[in-house]
Image (cartoon, rainbow, N blue to C red; front, side, top):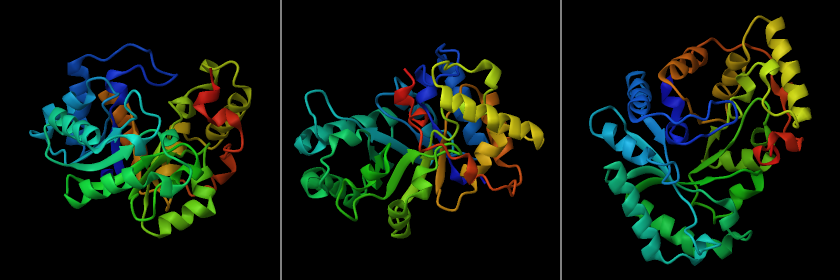
Amino acid sequence: MFNKIVLGTAQLTTSYGVTGSGASLNVEQSLDILRTASHCGITRFDTSPLYGSSQLLLSQITNTERCTEIYTKLSLPAGYSYYDDIPFSTLDTHLESCLQQLSVSNLECLYLHDPNGLYPNPLSNSRIADWLLSIRTQSVVRRCGLSVYQTSEAFALPQGIVDVIQAPVSIYNQSFLLSPDICHLLASGTKLFARSVLLQGLIASDPACWPLPNVKTLQSHHTSFYNHCVLINTSPLTLALQFVFNHPLVDSILIGVRSATELLEIAKNINSPPSGLDLEAWDLSFSSDINPASWS
């Protein structure tokens, strides 16, 4: 059941999301979450050098718990606008630093984290593609991935390089699930990892406590969804998780929590029987409100 879950670590060391308290977790609280995940059978973790000390935190469990898969990211270094312009030596140094911080000799997956750092034409990204292919061939990473926001960004690298697409997928944002091009890409063997499955916690929130007063379309949509859940005697959290978790195009889901209690609550809801309801009607991907970049 839990082999489909990847635990995100941004929430452990940063003030991520719009529904949290904003207070930072201490080291013991963060480690409690990681150990609880491992004891639940969650053995895949998503991190990044940009997530504060999350890689160092993970290093404390990689050798003692059943952590088997680490997913981390390559962001654009200062002074570079495109991945293809980065010297191989700089890329190698970044990768080695990640491995050292995590206390591992290899990674399950390395994502390119900045889709704007890729040229629109895949042939113009040939150098970074060659580097990714080389570290995969050397088994330093098992898979190469792209962390994207728009469906068009999933095709920025030459064919055969991208093993995993990490993208926003939720009951409110079904754009990647409804795209014929993405469906074709997945049929060729690329895996879709869903992130933002609760839209920074908004989908599971009470509309009475809505934190974004200027985001009216999303607020109205969420209120309707919340009332629908009340009517059918279920929770928004349950339906939102079931939609993504049981969707045939989604290989894995990335979740982030602020406490071990939250993690256990999500695990309980994921373990609920599928609702059997048609949930595609709750798609709001046509609205700009679905993009967190529009919330400020």
